[in-house]
Image (cartoon, rainbow over all chains, first blue to last red):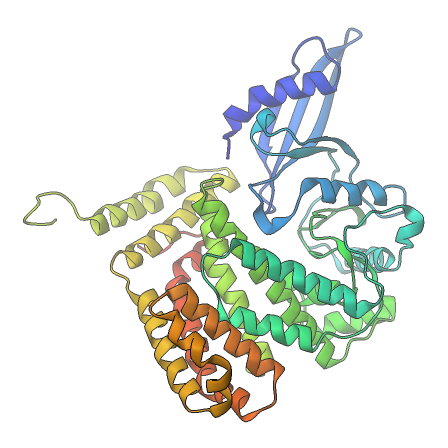
Amino acid sequence: MRSVEELRPRLARYFAAKLGLTSEPEIRDLSRITVGHSRANYRIDLAYQENGAEITRTFAVRFEQGGMFGTSSLAELKVMRGLAGTGTPIANVRWWEADPSVTGQPFFVMDWVPGRADVPDRPTLRKYIRHLEDLHTLDWRGAGVEFELVPVVGRDGTLMQIDRWFGLYRRTRYRPVPVLEEIAAWLRKNAPDGPVGIVHGDPGPSNFLHANGEITALVDWEFTHLGNPNEDWSFLVSMRGVGIMPQPEWAALIEEITGTHLTDAEWRYWEVYNQFKGACANISALRVFVTRQNMAPNMVAIGTALHLRMVQRASDLIDGTA
Amino acid sequence: MSEDTHHPTVDELLEGAIVTLKQIVFPSLTETWPKASAAQLTGALSYARFLLDDTSQNDRAVEAKGTIEGVVAGSEELRAQFADRVKEVGDDEFAILQLASDLLAYAINNDTDGAHAITRGLRPTLRAQLAQEAEQTMPMLMTFGGAPVDA
């Protein structure tokens, strides 16, 4: 993890090369965006001369953090570039840098998208739900969006994702977590059939931007995959949307806008799944911390306290005690 | 202060760091990310204080092994499936927890007397251990949102 002052000269050289400048641009601001723990996100304001005129531009830079959550920038930006032009509000990806010698970690650069990440008013929230439904039903083959795992039917997609997250847990754990392994077995045994679509994987407030009542961008695409879109509705309602409105209100709103109806058993299954997904992903943060790739205190909290709470919650849901 | 060594104890140093972070560093910070990091650090240091004298991880493995031995010994079905592994795990914490994991998965995937014995006899112990471990990490959960811990 490099400090802002260490990043500043490296990024100045990088942007000079990418923008074809004869001298390094002035970095007027370089500040970490507080949203997001999986990647280190920065806003960078640049100023430089071009044909005798001063140009100012703002970008977002998204750094990997040592394999946090087992996701890669390359897969993420492939999805983002594939979705460009499909009607999905999404930031334009400029450049991807795989060479860790540039700043220490792979990263990519996006055009800055204006907007706020807080909870919007209800009409704007309705537009977000519409965008999410459009994503779920998008003809992804026709749009040319690339995915590593391509299920044939919905149940396969769910099983693939369970294996993906279980695999991450097994690779990054320091010791077995028996209750988490029980949850994986329960999820495999009870995996439902259903449609296959693009699943954002981490939808909800803080992961979309809005301005003047419009959705300006859906962000944070690192978990995006093909699977059962009910995963997203559950994540929106039971993870990021908690505290905005009760689950029955969320369910009614989603059904009104999209026609999607989940039974109580489906809501329960998908929340167990999402808690499991989060628990598996979070344990990777402990390895990132212990291997000294990022020794910030949020890493150790995510890898222990948050991980354990998610295992507990999923287990309670299976038990019927949640 | 340790009387025999005449230097501060690790616990005293950690407590001092928490108090300093909370009373001096945290209030002086204005940017959101450094402020949240300072708060989270108080949680991590509180957890470090707990870990200084903690033996609960080893205690949990010992308890899990004892429970596994009792559950497996009481079921012919489980003895046939798992007795060799119970012998093999010895005191290896990783192996004990992996065996516990496999037993819980077995109980999910089977509807037999042995599976029910695991659900009744082993599962409550492991869930209680999970709850205990989660409780021990509470200072980090409480500070994750950006408010420092009460030292």
